[in-house]
Length: 114
Length: 114
Image (cartoon, rainbow over all chains, first blue to last red; front, side, top):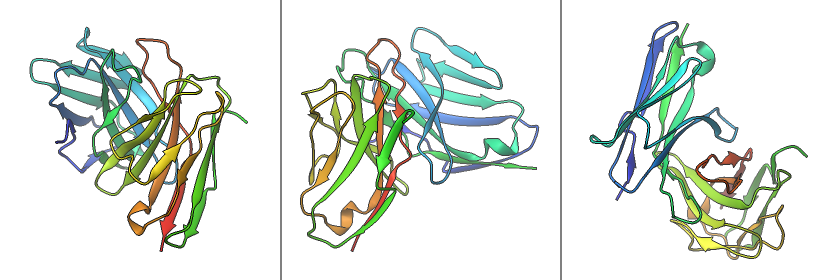
């Protein structure tokens, strides 16, 4: 049973346009959500996160939106740049889980076309 | 050393052999994690350790063991490798300071079991 789902394996966007990456989750106990970016042959790097007490968090060109009722979050990248081309993983965790284990989605490969 | 290091970078291993993947962090993070990444499956947690001296099982622990003798090191051992353990392995660490759940990842070890 996949608890974190990224239903789009890939996404192509023109440079300068908005990239929107989506993520759905099924476990209502999740209360903290993260996005990681991964380049080939490198480890994932933390991008941005959001607590379930918020519905939006912004950091420069990156904004994450959380819709708890729909169990849905999205990552917006504006404007998109060729260097943003990477695989993006959505992850979720729940407080009180002790280890704060992260459950990852399968990832979405973003290609920003110059 | 800065951050998390993993060794080896890559390895080709005969089935049935024993292999230890090394992970060292210098950030004094309490928690450490091992993930495997397989195409189309995202990152899956193998084992974790909340603090030195303790370990726990993740989503896919079978065939793997870990130890946490000190804060900095978290080796992953495959006692008798099988081809299905061909994967890219990532070590991660986290400072236990709620509510911040960001995990920091190493560069990965690419393991091929023949």
